[in-house]
Length: 306
Image 1 (tube, rainbow, N blue to C red):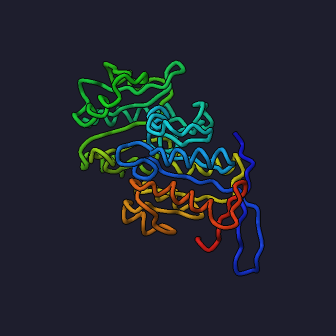
Image 2: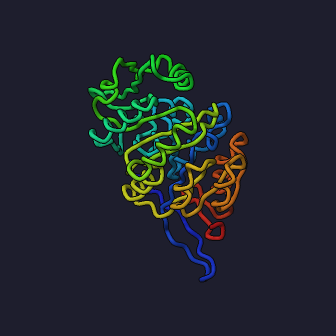
Image 3: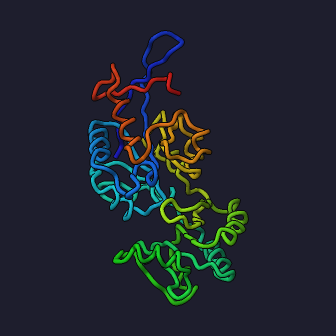
């Protein structure tokens, strides 16, 4: 799905001139592109579809799976790459086609899962098993918070309850989710963060503490880097709300935090935009594309905003 759209970039300070650059807009999902009801609004869907169909390059980056992300963004029908599982996978929004993927070394995954379960943390393990994406767990051992999350996925074709720890370690593992007490998870985050990619935070909706563990190369920022190289993007504009978006903000050329964002993220931003419940990202994008001199086929990015 290579996008050949080029944007005009206005250079200031060295005289008026134009430099063709290829820009990718990247938004976090929960708390940023999604409203508090865990859905994108009709307005946001309309803006994103129009921009992508007009040639602009857009992606969202989320900890969600493709299945759940696709559900909460159901009105976005345009074809563009989406970064899911915190960067473990990149898929085509419209077709689900896998574009990029990362998996654990099997021995490392087995050791990690056994160490977690030996200390009383019973994770939800995501893997490809016989060509199908599944999430596995021990239904009699998971805690109430993990059980609530699993119930929220009732009817999901990926649901795979198992009876043994050995069954948790089967096949191509790419993501491990632990939902437990803050103190229990903190020690493992400290231990694993140099070996694997870890995202440790309080979940946006429930307030539960989560530790999500991925292959070392998997992250939102790394997925954007891979897309940048694959499709030849020159310039990255990012949007987010949480501390887990900091690495994405650090590698972006422009970074915008929504008004409801964590203070730590606001401190690392180019500017603060409207809140998620006011469709801040979509409004910013629509305003940017409608600035004077921005043609429908060649929206411009001003250096003065950097």
